[in-house]
Amino acid sequence: MTKNTTHTSKKVLGQIPGSIIYTGKKEHQKLFIESFDYNKEHCTVKELDSVQESFEYKLTDSITWINLNGLNHVDEIEKLGAHYNLHPLVLEDIVNISQRPKIDEYDDYLFVSLKMLYYDNEQNIISEQVSFVLGKNYVLSFQESEGDVFDQVRDRIRNAKGRVRTMQSDYLLYVLIDAIVDHYFNVIETLSDKIEYFETTIFSGEADDDISQKIQNLKREILRVRRNIFPLREVISRIEKNENKLIHKKTITYYRDIYDHLIQVSENIDIYREMIWSLMDMYMTSISNKMNEVMKVLTIMASIFIPLTFIAGIYGMNFEYIPELKYKYAYFILWGVMIVLFVGMLYYFRKKKWL
Image (cartoon, rainbow, N blue to C red; front, top):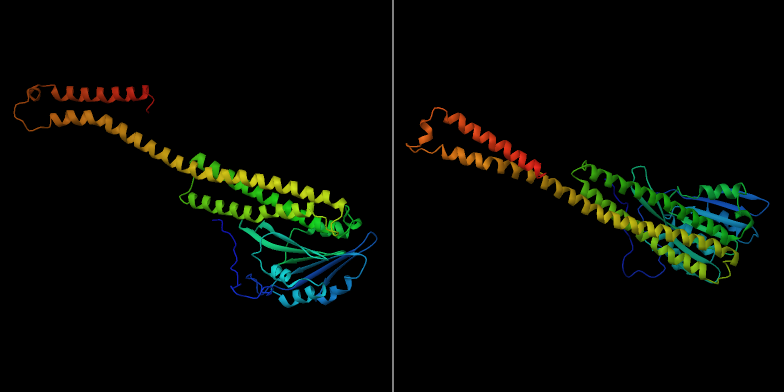
């Protein structure tokens, strides 16, 4: 059975805006910080023991990507936010994992929050919030736990593949978001496989008794994916149309490509949404057809035995004077009539294609 991973928010009404409270369940997640500092000529990759070690990169001319895993380490996030002059509301949104995909524009940086989707080993859909802060020469990323879809980006930075080492920080933000969006295609491909499996199972008549519950779970899964992906179109659209100094004109085309991919993903999700709605109708129709087949067989059997029962009923009456009872071959004649009726009705039903 597919189940969705959900989180219970710890925020309560009436808290002061800007209160930095982690709302997830991974309270014991280990802090992991990595940094990529690069330009055309060099690339330095480090695993940092504390956020203080990343402070030296802010004033360099190179491009820096600092990735922090472990939103439960609120104190470290506050230190990093203080050094980069991040607004308290931004820090609040970073550790609030139920945040809707959004973009906020500030004087010296952009804040972008979105959802990273993937399936675990048990084919349960996992939604993890990823937040980005784009500055003049840096990108900060915040994840709830280790494991992401950025391995190819790391490889491109280390080995100077593609344009990433020759471009500015806005391009780095693009390749990180693009990696997440590209992984959406893997998610919808898995959804497509699940829908195809259910269709084949229902059409072949091999559906389990709990198939309706599985379809309902898949419907909730698709709705959850849709809810996490659709708002991102507005985010990318705002970046594409924004005239912020941090987004260069030559990079806008790349963000437009992300928007095109999101449109494609959204269209597929809408198609799958319609298909999953029809799956339940298809299942109910198959159940109704099976019931009709059973009723048809029972009706035909009843129709065959009604005249036979009528004949047997007449000659089973306890009247003393029934002329045929005295006839020597009456018993065999009665059997003959009943057999002829039985065969004749079978022939008639087959001719009518009711059998």
